[in-house]
Length: 202
Length: 118
View (spheres, rainbow over the protein chains, first blue to last red):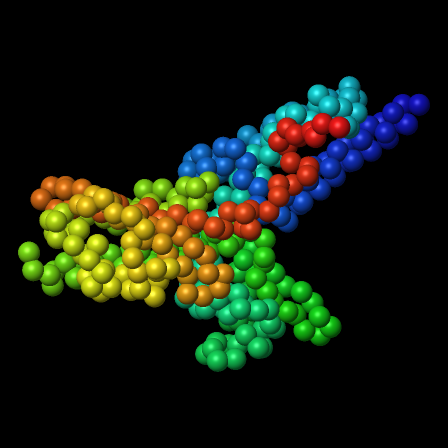
């Protein structure tokens, strides 16, 4: 009897954590969810030390929320129970989002990677087709592609022996790309404006 | 350069610069097409004419990317006198990407569900 109870408990626990993992992977797959507080968090968590502390706090919160399940006081699916765990999960998704954003800017700050990304924006292709017209070695190309992929800008699709790369069409990256482009654009324009102002008569 | 904020929600870029020239001169550089062309080429704009202008204070232009996905945006240049020079504030915002770049939220999100009656 006890064994059965323990078994069902651990099963409930496993089911519950599977649910969290599922939800999380769903969200990160979509990479578009902007949770409330995301903006605030992004500012706060620039500092790596704070990030670490925050992760620790989230882990504790998650653990605390799982406690009733471990103690057998509740079963997975209990409406009251997952609130804290969901909150913790929710916030950690925000965290993923803001890290993703930093990744995007880092990925696009490199001129070669931006060129690769722009090439892919015109249509998907494989790595060797991508290399055509670019003075870049095969390992370097795959390195760049891996950075782009990690930032969620580009996705890969296996087609027989070849791997096709294409721009990940899911939302956020389009906006981030736009922001990255003009973030670099305006300082250059303002320099030109300053030069013009020096040339103009009073 | 002083980057103030990147408001994700509004999809806007806000930048502030300190220029040595007087506001009147900066205003001419911003608003007179021949001068504007020398630092902000027409190629970046959707239309060469300003969307709106408040003389001596702010001018707006519409921009369109010259490569896919050809996103359109509006840039606002605001100027004000500052310590013998001019403070230039650039507010640049996407106008049309909202709908297509922001897919429907996840069905299993934690937001309260809005139930449809009947």
